[in-house]
Length: 95
Length: 212
Image (cartoon, rainbow over all chains, first blue to last red; front, side, top):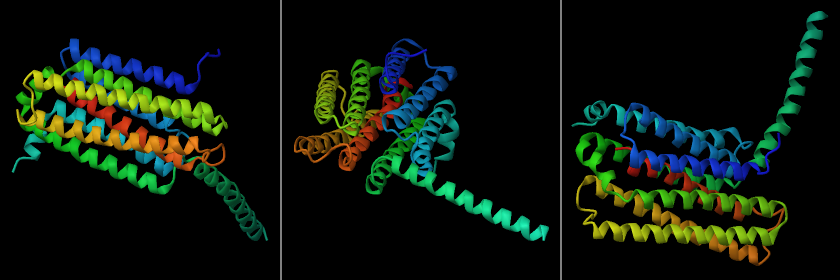
């Protein structure tokens, strides 16, 4: 099956849809564990799409590509953990 | 004799592996956009923002009520619109790169001007959002959430302005016929910097506007 749009355009459209979904969550849905995981997953998806398709790092040197990708795996995980377990982070960072 | 034959075979296989490995590495290096200098800059900027995000998360864990109420008072429409605009600008600059690589200089210029237009729209929306905040009595000194909100968003806005100056510079150079299908490293580096700005906003938007 051949789509009438190229990979760049497809990535852009997916990114727009994910952003609008995030905005819908912000306005209408009460934040729960599932929502936090969902929102952080969309950060990962959007980051990976920009890095792989828009920046064009899909076939780049592994070191450069993975340094960028790991940023989008580590930070959203940290965000999810800190939102889900704030008291643990507060305990770890209290003097 | 069998042992020496085996050793010779292993040696020849190893040499073959090296022959195959070198072109692969060279190919990956050739397909890596930008130069080392721009990657060092991008990693430094991302590291700087990562420290801001960690500081934000720590503050959030210490002041849960303030950080829970803060996002509800922000203009989600402005945040969403800016995300859509920045993602679109990233798409424009990626199209500009695809065009110059195909030798389509005029098409590349169109996409670059669109990128600059999107950057200007982002700045306009951000200005409107700040004035909307002011009208609602929201200032940087109101509480820790808004101090960090202004610090993060103003810092990001500064990067957008720097990125716009860079894109304008490479647009002028493209007009001057400096870049073509074989020489586009400067343009590519500017495009990578612009994508980095988009990547940072992809984290800022849910952190400030969505998660509470």
